[in-house]
Image (tube, rainbow, N blue to C red):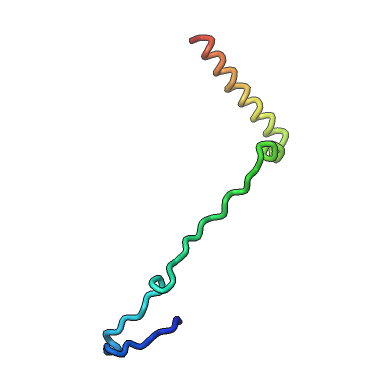
Length: 72
């Protein structure tokens, strides 16, 4: 327990004890910042199969963008 001081002028039934956050304000705890990874590190962490799937997906997206522009 914290150091409690008696209330000399009030009877014990009327005395109010100090609340913990009044004496020591809580400090907000922020989560640590996420680690910074370079794109090359992320790419290298992917399996060869997943790298191939990502390349194919990007290629399909680019083809759709260029085909849409050609028809507009």
